[in-house]
Length: 188
Image 1: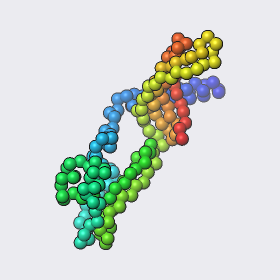
Image 2 (image 1 turned 135 degrees about the vertical axis):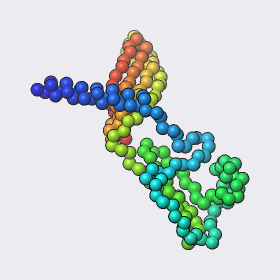
Image 3 (image 1 turned 120 degrees about the vertical axis):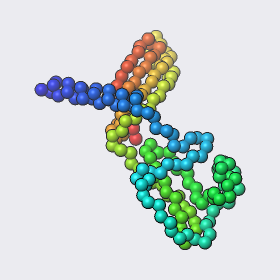
Image 4 (image 1 turned 30 degrees about the vertical axis):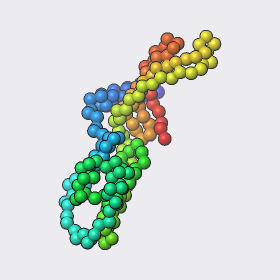
């Protein structure tokens, strides 16, 4: 009875792994929102896209950050630097996070000052990931016949449940061994 349960659990795990690998392989990769060398307009969150835009009375003046200085310090694109109708009212730096971050820029209509607020969104419990890594390890070994050892390895993470990740892992080492494994790990 226990052996049968183990067999069914293994079959389910293998089916999830194969399905997740196929999903990660054939699903198109999402476009990067923020390239490293240039500014781009951040897309609106889907929940906000359909909300109606309304006009409200504004302040007589708006407080901005000195455009010439901020343009140089932040290396803003020419489309903003050279357009007097575009002014910088707020700035923020968002720390790296494995999930998504919601960003909202607010204008106080009484004072005319802008402010950017952020909130880190909790990642979903289940997710199909598509992250790959390859690397080389080299170092000392306790084997008498091979005091130095090297490993060429690769890992493809394709499924996540909470902080548990499921991946395919392979390696070739200097001991003439090759391995293909399912890798399960917990990250925090």
